[in-house]
Amino acid sequence: MAGYDGRDPRATPQSTDQFTGRAFVAWNPSAPGAKIEDTVTIAHGTVTTLTVDERWPTVHVRGLDRPTVLEL
Figure 1 (tube, rainbow, N blue to C red):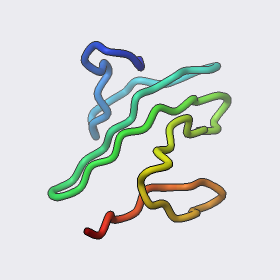
Figure 2 (figure 1 turned 90 degrees about the vertical axis):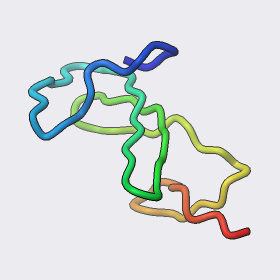
Figure 3 (figure 1 turned 180 degrees about the vertical axis):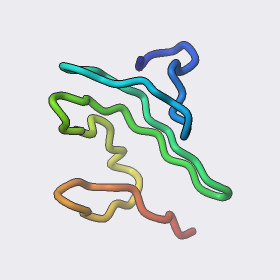
């Protein structure tokens, strides 16, 4: 589910896919003018972010460093 191929399955409101046990997932939600890409593990209902780019500014949210707006 995380790699160089296209992502499958895609998360949509109609998705019925479920993760059981442990999975590695490429997660890249987007909205107009915003996008983020993460690789996460899902294990027993807990999501752990594996990717943080030290060159991008972050904020601490619920125990995780999350990307914030880069101001030039």
